Length: 123
Image (tube, rainbow, N blue to C red; front, top):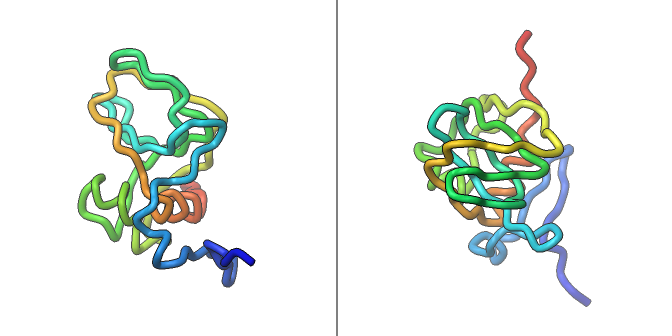
C-alpha cells in the first residue's frame, strides 16, 4: 500500500514532509513553473512552450501580490506561508507571455501552496 502524499483539512491541502523537495507533478509532460515578465507581472502555471522570451502557460494564475515569502525563489521552492494575504486571481486556461525575464521550476510544495490560495477578488 502506498502512502498518501497529501491530506486535506478544512479545504486546505497539505503535503508530506518527504515530498517537499520533489519537483512539482507534471501534467501531460509539462513542468509547473513561475514566470516573471518584464511588463506583465508574475505568473505560475504549466509550461506548454517557450520560444526565446515568449512563454505559453496552461492553467495559469497571475501572482499579483504574495505574502509569506520574500523572493520568487522562495515562492518556487516553499510556496507562501500567508495565503490569505496573497492576491492571486482565478486560473486562466492558457496565456501567452511576452518578454519573460525568468522561468523558475516549482516544487510540489510550492505548486500546492499556489493552488490553495483563494482566488482574489477586488471588492
